Image (cartoon, rainbow, N blue to C red; front, side, top):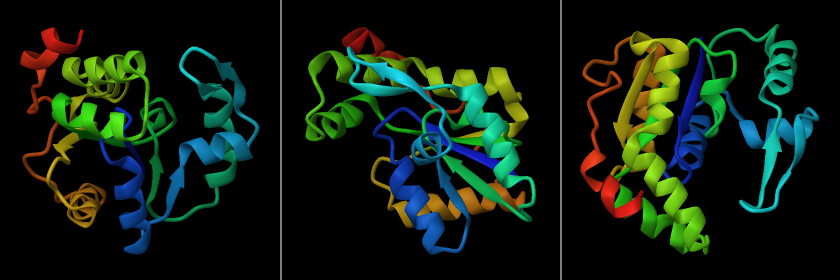
Length: 179
């Protein structure tokens, strides 16, 4: 299975990806793959972030992973836009997410944009629209150790995840504060 590990920046994707790798699950960090495979199409100066050509990256990953056997996790906030069989969307209460992003020294506008996206459930909505609700799982990472979240991702890979389907987490009441 090719699984996207996705979510708003700051929800714990990288930490959970590292925990999965320590547990023996192959993990491909999408940002690194984009640079390595020549899929960075430009730079967004306002957001101070690389712009990734998702189609080019998807084709390159398809070629690279064609011979791969078993499960692979694509980790990154764009992973659900790539050719995957399913997605795990990591979620975080917007107020907690704002603290995490400020610790990264992100500017107020970038913090607000990302926290608003989390409050509105943008990533989980995109994943469900792309893959269908049955292929998308979500769970909150606030107060949960990365190894515990990685164990939940492994349950998704094994087909034994219950009660984690998309649509159960709702942070909409925080949207007026951020959006």
